[in-house]
Length: 204
Image 1: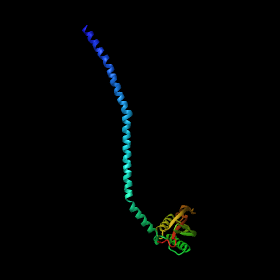
Image 2 (image 1 turned 90 degrees about the vertical axis):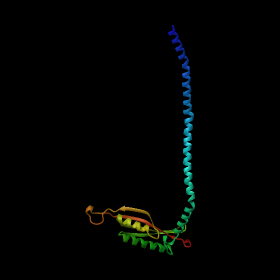
Image 3 (image 1 turned 60 degrees about the vertical axis):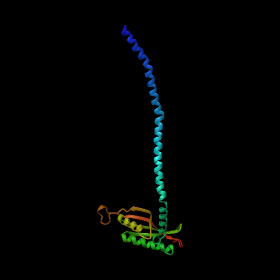
Protein backbone atom coordinates (compact mmCIF):
# COMPACT_ATOMS: atom_id res chain seq x y z
CA UNK A 1 0.00 0.00 0.00
CA UNK A 2 2.89 2.33 0.77
CA UNK A 3 4.20 1.88 -2.74
CA UNK A 4 0.90 2.90 -4.27
CA UNK A 5 0.82 6.02 -2.12
CA UNK A 6 4.29 7.06 -3.27
CA UNK A 7 3.30 6.58 -6.90
CA UNK A 8 0.21 8.69 -6.46
CA UNK A 9 2.21 11.47 -4.82
CA UNK A 10 4.81 11.41 -7.66
CA UNK A 11 2.09 11.64 -10.32
CA UNK A 12 0.48 14.55 -8.52
CA UNK A 13 3.82 16.44 -8.34
CA UNK A 14 4.47 15.88 -12.05
CA UNK A 15 1.01 17.17 -12.87
CA UNK A 16 1.66 20.26 -10.80
CA UNK A 17 5.06 20.94 -12.54
CA UNK A 18 3.70 20.76 -16.10
CA UNK A 19 1.95 24.17 -16.02
CA UNK A 20 5.06 25.71 -14.46
CA UNK A 21 7.38 24.49 -17.23
CA UNK A 22 4.83 25.48 -19.82
CA UNK A 23 4.67 28.99 -18.37
CA UNK A 24 8.47 29.22 -18.33
CA UNK A 25 8.63 28.08 -21.96
CA UNK A 26 6.04 30.62 -23.04
CA UNK A 27 7.88 33.37 -21.16
CA UNK A 28 11.17 32.46 -22.88
CA UNK A 29 9.44 32.39 -26.24
CA UNK A 30 7.96 35.85 -25.60
CA UNK A 31 11.40 37.18 -24.62
CA UNK A 32 12.86 35.77 -27.84
CA UNK A 33 10.11 37.38 -29.92
CA UNK A 34 10.63 40.74 -28.20
CA UNK A 35 14.35 40.53 -28.94
CA UNK A 36 13.81 39.61 -32.59
CA UNK A 37 11.07 42.17 -33.20
CA UNK A 38 12.32 45.09 -31.08
CA UNK A 39 15.91 44.97 -29.91
CA UNK A 40 17.46 43.44 -33.02
CA UNK A 41 15.96 46.08 -35.41
CA UNK A 42 17.00 48.82 -32.99
CA UNK A 43 20.53 47.44 -32.94
CA UNK A 44 20.64 47.28 -36.74
CA UNK A 45 19.28 50.83 -36.96
CA UNK A 46 21.95 52.05 -34.55
CA UNK A 47 24.63 50.32 -36.62
CA UNK A 48 23.33 51.93 -39.83
CA UNK A 49 23.18 55.36 -38.18
CA UNK A 50 26.72 54.97 -36.87
CA UNK A 51 27.93 54.03 -40.36
CA UNK A 52 26.18 57.06 -41.88
CA UNK A 53 27.78 59.29 -39.24
CA UNK A 54 31.23 57.91 -40.09
CA UNK A 55 30.66 58.55 -43.80
CA UNK A 56 29.42 62.08 -43.13
CA UNK A 57 32.39 62.87 -40.90
CA UNK A 58 34.77 61.57 -43.60
CA UNK A 59 33.07 63.75 -46.23
CA UNK A 60 33.23 66.79 -43.94
CA UNK A 61 36.95 66.28 -43.36
CA UNK A 62 37.52 65.94 -47.11
CA UNK A 63 35.53 69.08 -47.88
CA UNK A 64 37.39 70.93 -45.14
CA UNK A 65 40.71 70.04 -46.78
CA UNK A 66 39.41 71.21 -50.15
CA UNK A 67 38.16 74.46 -48.64
CA UNK A 68 41.53 75.01 -46.97
CA UNK A 69 43.23 74.77 -50.39
CA UNK A 70 40.82 77.23 -52.03
CA UNK A 71 43.22 80.18 -51.97
CA UNK A 72 46.00 78.09 -53.49
CA UNK A 73 43.86 76.90 -56.38
CA UNK A 74 42.41 80.34 -57.03
CA UNK A 75 45.94 81.73 -57.26
CA UNK A 76 46.91 78.83 -59.53
CA UNK A 77 43.99 79.56 -61.84
CA UNK A 78 44.94 83.23 -62.03
CA UNK A 79 48.52 82.27 -62.85
CA UNK A 80 47.44 79.90 -65.61
CA UNK A 81 45.14 82.53 -67.07
CA UNK A 82 47.96 85.03 -67.15
CA UNK A 83 50.31 82.48 -68.70
CA UNK A 84 47.66 81.70 -71.28
CA UNK A 85 47.78 85.28 -72.44
CA UNK A 86 51.50 85.33 -73.14
CA UNK A 87 52.37 86.02 -76.76
CA UNK A 88 54.31 82.80 -77.31
CA UNK A 89 51.13 80.74 -77.12
CA UNK A 90 49.40 82.68 -79.90
CA UNK A 91 50.00 83.50 -83.54
CA UNK A 92 51.53 86.96 -83.58
CA UNK A 93 50.71 88.65 -86.88
CA UNK A 94 49.07 91.96 -87.72
CA UNK A 95 46.24 90.43 -89.73
CA UNK A 96 44.42 87.13 -89.99
CA UNK A 97 45.47 86.82 -93.64
CA UNK A 98 49.15 86.97 -92.71
CA UNK A 99 48.55 84.51 -89.87
CA UNK A 100 46.87 82.05 -92.26
CA UNK A 101 49.77 82.35 -94.73
CA UNK A 102 52.29 81.68 -91.99
CA UNK A 103 50.28 78.69 -90.82
CA UNK A 104 50.23 77.23 -94.34
CA UNK A 105 54.01 77.64 -94.60
CA UNK A 106 54.54 76.01 -91.25
CA UNK A 107 52.34 73.04 -92.19
CA UNK A 108 54.17 72.57 -95.48
CA UNK A 109 57.55 72.57 -93.70
CA UNK A 110 56.31 70.08 -91.09
CA UNK A 111 54.84 67.64 -93.63
CA UNK A 112 57.74 67.68 -96.07
CA UNK A 113 60.28 67.58 -93.24
CA UNK A 114 58.69 64.43 -91.86
CA UNK A 115 58.62 62.77 -95.28
CA UNK A 116 54.93 63.15 -96.10
CA UNK A 117 53.47 64.25 -99.43
CA UNK A 118 51.42 67.43 -99.10
CA UNK A 119 48.44 67.44 -101.48
CA UNK A 120 46.86 70.77 -100.58
CA UNK A 121 46.21 73.36 -97.91
CA UNK A 122 43.08 75.49 -97.81
CA UNK A 123 42.49 78.47 -95.56
CA UNK A 124 39.33 78.24 -93.46
CA UNK A 125 37.69 81.66 -92.92
CA UNK A 126 38.75 83.16 -89.60
CA UNK A 127 36.23 84.15 -86.96
CA UNK A 128 36.21 85.62 -83.46
CA UNK A 129 35.88 83.44 -80.35
CA UNK A 130 35.63 85.57 -77.20
CA UNK A 131 38.85 87.65 -77.11
CA UNK A 132 40.56 85.47 -79.75
CA UNK A 133 40.56 85.14 -83.52
CA UNK A 134 40.48 81.54 -84.75
CA UNK A 135 42.93 80.85 -87.58
CA UNK A 136 42.52 77.49 -89.33
CA UNK A 137 43.84 75.65 -92.37
CA UNK A 138 42.51 72.41 -93.89
CA UNK A 139 45.30 70.02 -94.86
CA UNK A 140 45.36 67.04 -97.21
CA UNK A 141 48.36 64.73 -97.51
CA UNK A 142 49.54 61.15 -97.98
CA UNK A 143 52.02 59.41 -95.74
CA UNK A 144 52.70 56.32 -93.66
CA UNK A 145 51.48 55.76 -90.12
CA UNK A 146 54.88 56.56 -88.62
CA UNK A 147 55.19 59.79 -90.60
CA UNK A 148 51.66 60.82 -89.64
CA UNK A 149 52.47 60.30 -85.98
CA UNK A 150 55.54 62.54 -86.36
CA UNK A 151 53.54 65.24 -88.17
CA UNK A 152 50.82 65.32 -85.53
CA UNK A 153 53.35 65.39 -82.70
CA UNK A 154 55.36 68.25 -84.19
CA UNK A 155 52.21 70.21 -84.99
CA UNK A 156 50.78 70.07 -81.49
CA UNK A 157 53.97 70.23 -79.40
CA UNK A 158 55.58 73.47 -80.62
CA UNK A 159 54.86 77.18 -80.19
CA UNK A 160 52.57 78.92 -80.92
CA UNK A 161 50.03 76.37 -79.74
CA UNK A 162 48.18 74.61 -82.56
CA UNK A 163 45.39 72.06 -82.44
CA UNK A 164 44.57 69.24 -84.86
CA UNK A 165 40.83 68.83 -85.41
CA UNK A 166 38.55 66.70 -87.64
CA UNK A 167 41.24 64.12 -88.38
CA UNK A 168 40.26 61.63 -91.10
CA UNK A 169 42.47 58.71 -92.13
CA UNK A 170 41.85 56.37 -95.06
CA UNK A 171 44.16 53.57 -96.25
CA UNK A 172 45.31 53.70 -99.86
CA UNK A 173 45.23 50.35 -101.66
CA UNK A 174 48.63 49.80 -103.28
CA UNK A 175 48.93 47.67 -106.45
CA UNK A 176 51.40 44.85 -106.76
CA UNK A 177 50.69 42.71 -103.67
CA UNK A 178 53.12 41.80 -100.90
CA UNK A 179 56.14 41.54 -103.20
CA UNK A 180 55.97 45.21 -104.16
CA UNK A 181 59.01 47.29 -103.25
CA UNK A 182 58.63 50.58 -101.40
CA UNK A 183 56.41 51.62 -98.49
CA UNK A 184 54.35 48.84 -96.99
CA UNK A 185 51.43 51.18 -96.33
CA UNK A 186 50.07 54.49 -97.48
CA UNK A 187 47.41 56.64 -95.90
CA UNK A 188 45.26 59.44 -97.24
CA UNK A 189 44.87 61.98 -94.45
CA UNK A 190 43.01 65.22 -94.00
CA UNK A 191 42.62 67.39 -90.92
CA UNK A 192 42.30 70.98 -89.76
CA UNK A 193 45.12 72.83 -88.03
CA UNK A 194 43.82 75.55 -85.71
CA UNK A 195 45.64 78.38 -83.95
CA UNK A 196 44.57 81.59 -82.27
CA UNK A 197 45.42 85.28 -82.40
CA UNK A 198 44.66 87.65 -79.57
CA UNK A 199 42.27 90.40 -80.46
CA UNK A 200 44.10 93.72 -80.59
CA UNK A 201 44.06 95.34 -77.15
CA UNK A 202 43.54 91.98 -75.35
CA UNK A 203 47.18 90.94 -75.01
CA UNK A 204 47.50 92.01 -71.38
